Length: 265
Image (cartoon, rainbow, N blue to C red; front, side, top):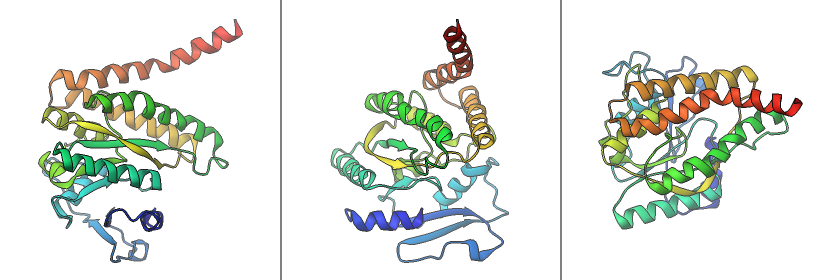
């Protein structure tokens, strides 16, 4: 992912950049990336504890937000470890930043994720994750055109200015919000008066590598979204859309059973 970032930014040199890799403390130092002029490594100490005892990615993100050396007016593009940039995304992000800086609105941006990488090795799981791309160009596109996160937010491909992210208070949400910290952060940001917008461009994701991983991933998302709907300290109107969507997702297996039964009937 680091190499892909460097290669794509060299192909499309529209803005200065730095790659910040946030990683938990590693016993084998040889496994850590080597810092370079465009690469910084933020290692989360093993003993680090957030004030609200957040875990997982939320803990690492909160530590990075407090210890990053980038300027307050720099824009941050959040990527998961398997998310790789494309020229499409770089152009879209730069266009989005120019528009936001010119208007002064400084909204939170998000674009589409594609899952076609290594599809020959994992055709079934790639097709399963392609449903998410359909979601991006349907529900998520709709909500970003409206300017509010009705259905939550992806943890990857978040485009936000550093001082705006810091003003939200970070990602220290405690056990109720650290499973799907992205959705929890989104509803809090909306209540605080921030708004979102669509970024024209796509990033390349990697689908799950096994059915077990796929099921565990979806279980984690469902569990985290339910906690967000129940415990996020925001008004009901910011949780209602996410709650209805999660409930409909829970009913999806019954729709599959109905469709199969109807086919045989």
